Image 1: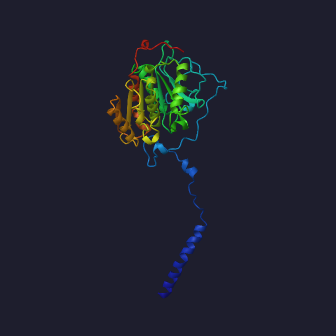
Image 2: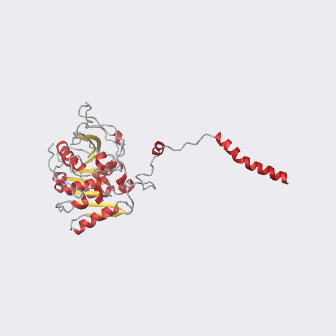
Image 3: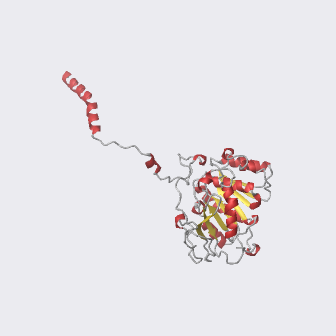
Length: 352
């Protein structure tokens, strides 16, 4: 018995040494690198709020830029007016690149999506445009809806949500009048604030709108001009409209990035609503019950109510996500187009 106990004791003493020797022959399992972690697809982003979701205010500006568009030195010609329209779900990279605004579009029931550039104090800026079927066919001008994307998206954000398909269907059944949509790429500047010439406010007011009114068959008065945006884009839409209400007939902010910390009182919609006469401006706000930016929406809603400024505020189930905005996109379009006549003869003649 004693011999057996001694043998077991010796084996127990040798066990750690045997284990260490065996492990020495196994290849080390590498730890995941930052690059590998970054390569993991964020399949949940934009559909819901994953556990690792970071509020928009702390997200860095995108570092990768989409493929550059041609400059004035390029010789590419704009897409011919007879080009078949792309399906509404076409990826942004598949959209035609136009050197100038197309002269017309086909009358086959589908609008035309393309990418272009406009000049500004910050250089040439990209945009995506939607032109309705039969563009320029009747010699009348068209209302223009300016739409801004969120802070981590691009100018394809609205079309990715299904914008073109809904507009095509609405025009076809008479729900909407034909209209133009301009969706600029805000990029890093879109995550910055203040209303100088190099901000989104300055670029829009001094660059984009004059470009559209001189290049498109647009209705160049406030009655034919509306603006809206998602998240950070909603902030910009409200800032621009509240500071320049004579330029627009309507403004919409969807899950807008509204916080007093976002910008100084000179530009912040939470303050500037009281600095201009907004009585002629239709105002829409909506947000999800679970939106992390909900407090700012409620603050502006309460301020507008106390000031007697007419507006519409809607709270829906959901959070801060693409699935939320896609679910309510038709409501946004219904609201904006409700301010425009359906009779094309009611529109002024095209001046371009």
